[in-house]
Length: 367
Ligand code: MRU
Image (cartoon, rainbow, N blue to C red):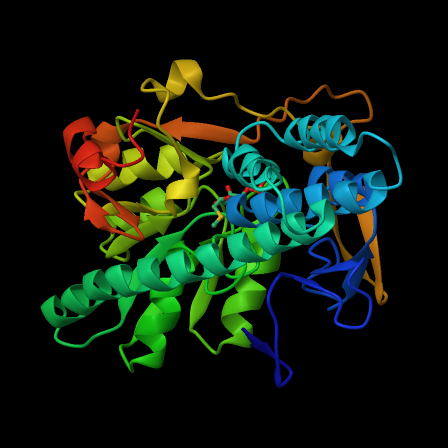
């Protein structure tokens, strides 16, 4: 995606020093656009954990680069592989819900076997390959989603299609393009009028801070709303389509996404508004079928709930929003059961959230 005339991905390898991974620092957006250097497994772990990088496909790619940095560090030892494997486990443990992290880390770990290139060379090749796979997936997802927006636009005789989204499933969360937002960008680029309702997405405000920034950067019309506004808008015919991302989907089509997604799905269902989840197959966990029972939901520091961060006087700052002694709970994700989902937008097409349809589309990956 182009920012200030320069084409960026959300993660890349430094051209001059290939032992350094560079990322856009999402903790500083939308106030400051800054690039951060990550040079060790710990740097990658901390960047994922504190959400310098976040979003399911991106934390997967970051984890893969973590394996690469582990390989670089381990080659000075006699038996490097066990060290790299330990680093891989450590990386996988840092955020539990998005299955993309384990998928990408294991993909890169698996690439290390056999003869030929050195371990770092193999790991780097694999991490870069993951970036290309996910970019291509997002491109395809965007084109499938574009068809949905096109048909919604036709039904409205060309009036702007109002799309509600939650959290940030744009290019920042992926390597490029986005999952939920790629179709919005493609529609906008194709001259189809679109308008996005952006849920602020407490507690970390990925909607207010990242989705709003992305859409503004791409000149896509949007309106920021509080997390509780969506139901009201739907009751008044102000939402045509809901498109969200996904952190882990089951073989039966349940979808875990940022906390609050489920409530949007309920409201969409009550108002007969199509609700789609867009994601690459790296977000599928084909081993599980009951999302509510089987998807691990990350619990984060309650301080994210008791405080809000923003900008004041040109500096980023954090303020407390509740009594000093308030206790708080911070569940990062919720699960939307398949019955509330109209369709899953994947790189292979749009399918109904039904085990038999998913199996048909992903027969080679289905266990
Ligand atoms: O906690 P986050 O910001 O990593 O959560 C991100 C989301 O829930 C996204 O919607 C999801 O990862 C899809 S990203 C294309």
